[in-house]
Length: 174
Image (spheres, rainbow, N blue to C red):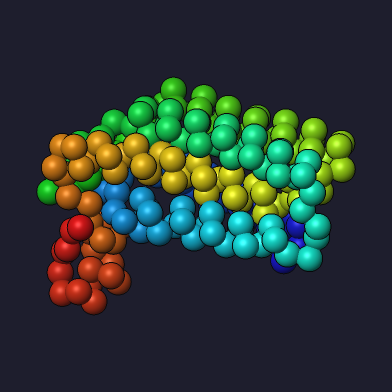
């Protein structure tokens, strides 16, 4: 994919995530664990590709990851979580958009500084996806802990239905 196409796809994913969080949704394991883990692992593997990862790259990636995780924890704490129809349901309040803005601005700042310092891997698309995955994992961790503490089941599928649940013969939780 071209750089513009890749950027537009990532922007579309982020807009879809934000829209679903603002609307509110049932939160299943696909949304909570699988997608963030896949983003994180695949992008981390991609970072070890043909380009040399320098110490400066690692510094900027680590800084960006720490910021993304902190914003993710704040996003998780901001979610309005409750049990609905026997499963975890959550909604981001409108002011949560400020947290998304903080994530984007921090990543852009790291990108610009890393690029200026020659840290090409830290300024790559893979590093952006890695920090997004870390952000999603951090938010998911907060929401999962809240659900476990309250005894609220988390459906296997993103909405409690779909392929995974259908293959297992109905609505299952973990």
